[in-house]
Image (tube, rainbow, N blue to C red; front, top):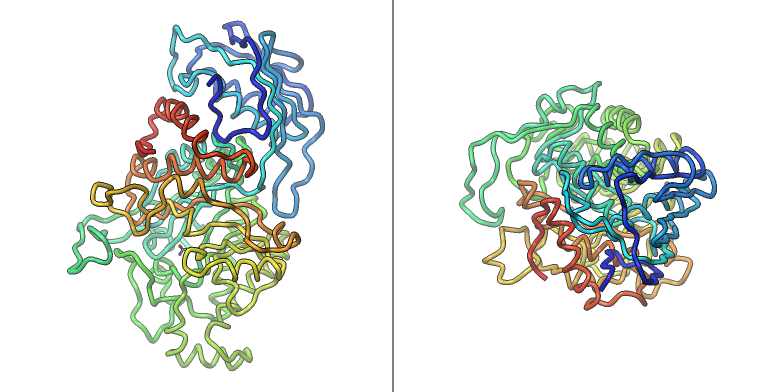
Length: 524
Ligand code: ACM
């Protein structure tokens, strides 16, 4: 096997001979300024391990990036075309694409053709920097190919987050969904409401062992951390260079204990005010549905929108129990005022207000599939996560109603679930069993949906909830190699996917991960 590309390109022709990168090589670019940006990125990728200067210059180089047009405006979901052609021949390398997004994907494929040492952070003298001759014509099957990282249950530094983004970009994924707030910690600085991070970013201690196990034990150690707005800008810029979109999630109206602990007026006052939670699960505490709370949330989103240029903004919306609203006289009065008869309509009222607010700013709302309960404008997109429990019918219905769909399903794409037997020998995980083989078997289509509805599937993403994931190595272990399988499921057309072939390529691909210190699960 001369090439071991993950994900497998749409069309790959292996040819005789190879290209060798030598010390005097330059990286050339032709086309608009965005081609220069991607050429700079490629040079930056190749310099540390090769130790070569690799100057970037306009015109032909040993490696030449050609962008045949200027980047168009993003489509209605925020994406640009990503197709590219890559020619590697003894005389030189050429990557051609109509957009900088295509060039960025081609650059990742080219890196995989060089020896795995290419991914090293330090000079590796004595390596022959050769890439086998190929002709590749490539394009993704689906537009949205991502990973979600929860930084609330456990905080990960901005450097760790950049590394997470870099690794997903290497798999030609293009969305980083950043779950920034939850009951266990508020992680994004909001200038107007400093207590969100002063109070909300620290919990007193953390549960030891599984949440299902009683009596509960705690570690007695405060856990905290948050991103200053400059940290956020750094991550967003890091991702943008790689043509990865960062979609921020501020989960509301449930999973809001950290915010309510910071500003008790956001809660349902008759009830005890929560602290930032030290346990995992679904809290009964939710935001109250006052106009003032909506205004608070819009203020937060104003600052979030300044930081994140993504078309989609994720409002969460999952697991918001209605009990507080059912038992609150004030919530009942608000329902009556608004002509609502069922408590779930309060969440629908709130989400619709945010949806209109986002649309007035040229943005679009995305939420977990609970946002469908109580109705929402079809322009809102839905992250379908409960397919493993509920089946596909509700996803089919949502797509038919005109909602764009991101497949984030707990049947195949929850990477916080166990991945191997025996479970007793694996690190503690939340539940479930989703081995890499199961991820690879995922068919990212809505069964039985007619073509119009089927086209609503933007793509999919893997979920890394971090209740039981506290370190970078453990995060690697849960994400990889399952994310490799998911990247291929979302990129490579179904008729090209074969698990045996994937496993062959994965065994070579592991060397690339290994050079970067990725603590991937050793199997399969
Ligand atoms: C979720 O897993 N609560 C979206």
